[in-house]
Image 1 (cartoon, rainbow, N blue to C red):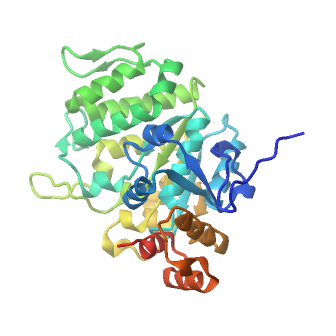
Image 2: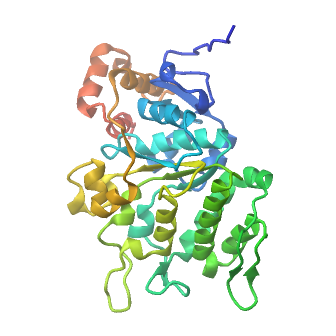
Length: 364
């Protein structure tokens, strides 16, 4: 007989492996260990408010919600011999898309997939830390600092798996007269070079993504691409300017080009999950949360065909689970939070919007 799971609370589940999450777990929280949190989210992936709250409450827990369950169901049934499927999470800002992506990252890690994760793509567009003209790609721009940071993030998320896979480069990369990464070198050497030499970091990222694509096609590894705020790559402006003060478009970034190449469906043995969000675009382009609007013509055509998955506001069940969690962690201490009337007030005031509810119950 199969072992049935025991539910520790009405709002919790002790099924800690996302691979096994299903409809039965909808609206329940599961805990993520400190070691997994450190591996997956040290370099980003949790919204600032959520990360700070988890630290205050001495533990990271994620609610199992329908969008993630739907995605996990698709991923568990994926034919990895077919071209990669693209999934697009959409919904209002603050509805929980980033948390759903965090859930999927945990799934991918447990499933033994190489994680290619961009925690928040708009940072490269709106808050660049020092772009420089690319030496290799004419009229393109590098993100040296961000590229070093991303390589560290990749390494932290995938260190043990990369050691096990022992992937090697399929071509030779010449960085300078003296510095060369020869074909057959461990991919870890490529990563280390980029982390230690910011000058070459952006091109190391591009080379790494290209090598992972080839490795997936040849079935040497399985890759999960997760990008939050993907529509920022198609924003009509950025904060990067040329010497003549003209604006550099996000599509003119070497990093953007590398990740756009990886999100085409011209490879196999992987999956691509991205989110689109109004806050990834300029203020004048935030009228709708739907993918067609958020991606624009160019972005929509790039991803088409894809499977859209809406991340809505909390259902009634999810709302009560969230309140139960806040009460249990003593984050919400008002006695009326335990009453139907008090909860009805919180539901009405927040509109069952996850971020609004979080801010509403904060004790400051």
